[in-house]
Length: 212
Length: 212
Image 1: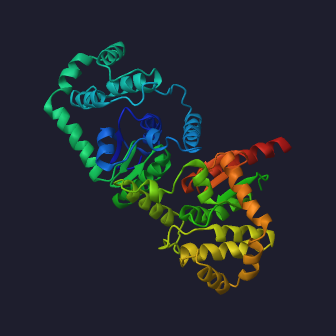
Image 2: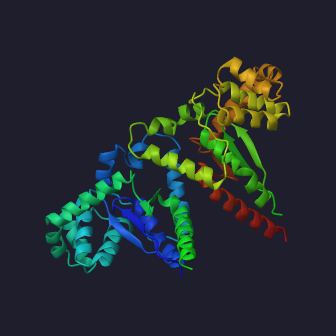
Image 3: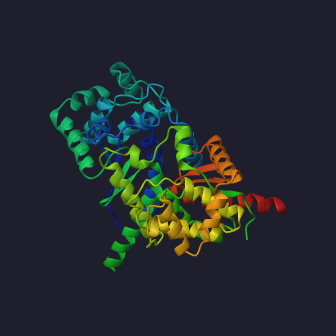
C-alpha cells in the first residue's frame, strides 16, 4: 500500500488518445494505490483558449508524421492488449452534449456506467454521438436512463462546472487531451503514462517516509 | 551479453532534442550490448521533403504547449543528470557545413572527436556555427584539423552521401530529429528512448533464443 496522491485524468470523449490512455489507468491504480479523479473538460474550449488544434488538423498534408502517429497507436494497442478500439468514422464529433452528460452523471452518482457507455459508443462501436437521436438510442441500449441525464445536463450548475473545469485546466497549463496531473505536475499524452506512474510512486514513497 | 541488433541514430547537429537524446545512448549500449550507428542527415532536407517543421515554428503562438515542451526538456535534463546543456541563442543554425563535415569526418576516421566537438560548440558552449570563421575557430580550439575536413567536405562523395542518407531516411518514414531505427522499426523523439531500448532487448532475446 502506498499513500494517496492526488491524481487527475482530464478527458473529452472526442479524443481517441484519451480513450486509449484510460485503458491503462486501472493498472496504474492497482500498482500504486492511487485513484484517478476523472475530470470532464471540453477539448474544443481548450483548443479555442490556447490556439492549439487536433493532430488530425495539425498533421494534415505532412508526409510520414500521420503514418507514425498511426504506428504509435498500433504499438499502444498491442502493448496494452486493446482489442475493442475502432476509429470513429464521424470524427470529429461535437462532444458538448456528451461532456455535459458526464458532469450531470457525476452530479447524479451514475458516472461510471455513463462513462463506460459513452466510450463504448464513441470508440468501440462508434456512432455519430452528436446526433441527439443516435445519442439517446445508444445510451438507452446500454441501460442508461439518458432522458433524465439530458434534462439534468441542461441545468446551469452542469454547464458552469464544465466551463469552470475547462478554464481551470487551461490556467494550469493544459492544451490538449489526454492530460494528467500528479499533484501539480502536468503530463500530456498517452505516452506519458510511464512518467505519470513513476511520479506517483516517487511522491507516495516520500509521503510514506514522512509518516514513519 | 545480448546478440547484436542493427540500431541507427539519425541526427542533425541543429536539433537540441537530438543532442539530448544522444546523451542516453551510451547507457543503452552498455545495458543491451547494441551499438548505435550514427547517421548524419540534413533536417532541413527532411522538413522540405515532408512539409514538416521544427517545434519552434509549429508551436509559435500556441498557449501552454511551448511551456510544456520546456518542462519536458527540464525533466529530461534532471532524469539524465545533464548539466552542460545550453540553448543556442543563434537557433536555428544552418547545419549544412556541420553535417557535411560529419560525413567527411566519418570518411576520414575522425568522427568521434568531430562529433563531440560539434555538439560542444552547438549545445554546451553554443556558437553561431554557420559562420565559417566561428566554425573554424571552434573546431581548432577543440583540437580538430578542421581545414582538412572543410576541404574534404567539398568533395562530391560527401555531398552525395548526405543527400542519399537524408532521402533514404524520408523514404523509410522519417519526418524529424532525432529518429531511431531498431531493425526496420522507426522511433521518433527523445521520449521514445525507453521503447527503443525495450525493442533492442526483445529482438536480442529472440536472436539469442534462436542460436541456442
